[in-house]
Image (cartoon, rainbow, N blue to C red):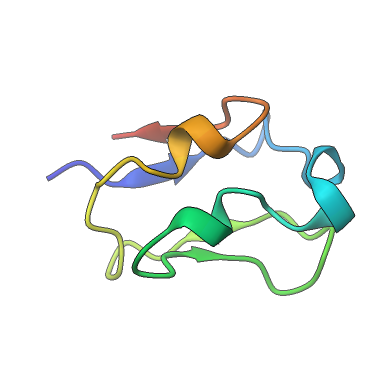
Length: 66
């Protein structure tokens, strides 16, 4: 099953409101983790179901399913 992967080269947390990853709020399993605002987010592969709800929420298209 594919999982969400965040491309660290494309991700710029300052592009999201308040430095908080906008894709986090739509993840039903809370698989996108961001410790502090403006920190780069990461995905928890154990929680990710591969639903792809997060991908269209990323303004920089830094989230892909792989």
